[in-house]
Length: 319
Image (cartoon, rainbow, N blue to C red; front, top):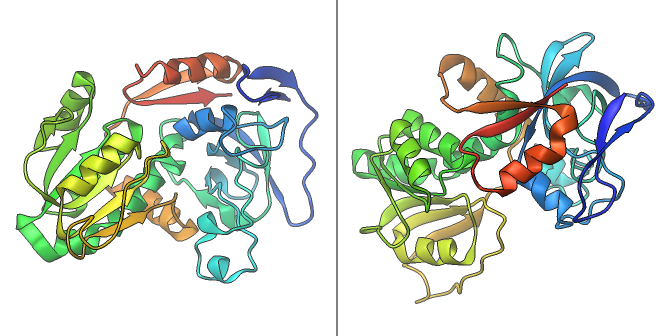
């Protein structure tokens, strides 16, 4: 089968021919239909996760199972025995083996999945268009849920801020619009992304340094030093900052360093149950996002395009 390998960190991806995957006891095989290209894939190539090599990247996977039919992959596989996994939070299991980050993922024509539970039926969703929901959509879905109680407490007076209007941020804007009454602001350096944010339902879209006032909920899809500093400056008392982005920012925390009783938390991926709920949500609500398809064998070109910062939606590799 055709597959894409990362053979060395900070080197181009390589197209290889591999034998079909060998399915272990209790495992399942899927024929990959599509795999989204995520910024986390770039971090894998850059060695941020210290992934074992060679590795087939890719975790935004849709495919076909011989019994379930069209499916979406839940990629953060936990140990399934610790208390965290027992509560359904496999994505933060300390012994997780995420597909595409630690074990072979979906940049291939086929892949193995260890448990049937990790394959969620797609129904009649388009498997190519829906591939980015598996990570980009799910991560934003959970992040917005983390802020839900604060926003609902304030009702129509709530103000929400989305930092970063890239692929995840665009999902976040829509989930906020569809699940809350908040006034939604967006901050992004790109005029094109700010324009897109307004099209998706944001009330205001501004550049860095143009924010006004405080916000009840801030979701930072960048996570860099300047964006975290901005979040700390603009979160209101008893507000919440949810950090999703992986760009390594750090801020002081303590009494007097941040507004009184403001919450600061990270949010990772989502649960198996939330993936099922997101698929149901996508059946009920038309989510707006652009998908650019590229052939699987052009994975390296897709990565370079994503690195350029010129991608306004999501790239999806198709087999």
